[in-house]
Image 1: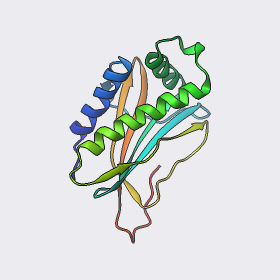
Image 2 (image 1 turned 60 degrees about the horizontal axis):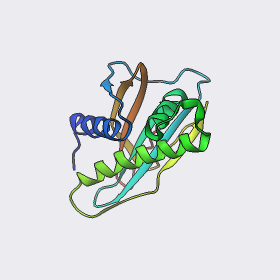
Image 3 (image 1 turned 90 degrees about the horizontal axis):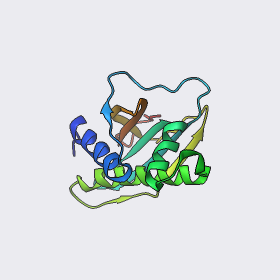
Length: 158
């Protein structure tokens, strides 16, 4: 199954709009967090007839703003756990929409969320298929679609 940038862009925009009521625009510049900046990554894996993962990397302020939009409250009123839960649910929705475009039987993992100022997440045996960068209310973030490589390959992605 091949996914185009346009396919993934539409999935991400649809989830952000329907779940959060936030508008996204594609950003032309790559997204790399500032050194020492607290960031979060939400990830779900897809297994079955197609294998890969969806990762959403964003700065903590955008994660908090997105969670506030989801829960209908102010960003400062949220606990850290609520911010993690919201990103997990967004990753789950994006991953579920990607899974829905796949022919054949597939399963979606539970979402995983990592947080910190200096970390790396790898999905061993995968390679980057697509990296998209978006701007949400002046804050950039990135979405990666990873795809399983040949089982003999030792490629990983972060």
